[in-house]
Length: 317
Picture 1: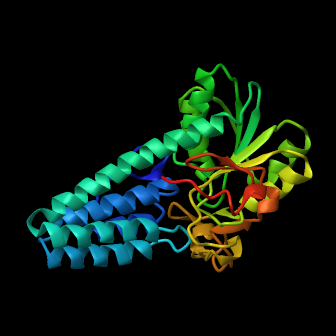
Picture 2 (picture 1 turned 180 degrees about the vertical axis):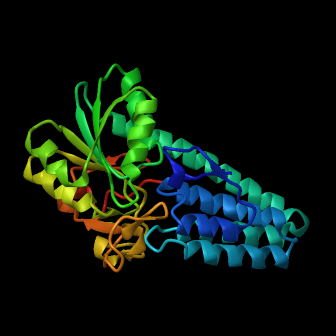
């Protein structure tokens, strides 16, 4: 059951996923975003294993599902995880073909548990960057991780205030404002084009965003609009932080493919045309923020400064 983020915050509803092709469609159609995409990939592969025949049939089905899921969003790097599942499947089919599917599902469930623990650790690290009275600006939505960080800070007696950009055109900032306000935090939604007023006025003390990808040199690729926040933060002396994964072999942010989505995602909102018919639109869904604009990278294992890289990448999940 997949929470349909496209219906939030007006409606809390779930999509029943019974086949990996439905998982692919949900990711492509932006029904789930940020870390939800990765969880959908892994659950989609677990479903595939459960439905597959044993032996060679299982191997073929896992490869087919992995290939389709890897192509669902080009900017997010799913290959590392799908390759893990393919390796587990190969090993299980060779050693115990009759129970291989159960073994693969067990590995995936264990990985999901590890990811949950890693995200908790990352939130704890992020919480150490915030002080009582901080006013924090964020962009896009971090699949609950900023909320988790805020809860940890609250438990530590730190009082925080949040500003969330709308994050057009999908308005993920509304999700951030919704989840933060539901938990009792002081959060204010602002238009994307007014972040400069928050940063230039001194009303903001920290900026933190997620990152769909990070490179070995510390460049990040995240939801479009992130780079301008980082640039403004540097201009006005506000530290900019990012939640990141491991970089893999990606050398710089320029090496990450940027996904260009349909213009209709700008001109149409929830089925309603919001601009005159025939209006052209341009929608690169991500942008690249150079490492020089970033104060700290919050990994699953520690907090890094871009100046520490690439030698600093020695964490293990």
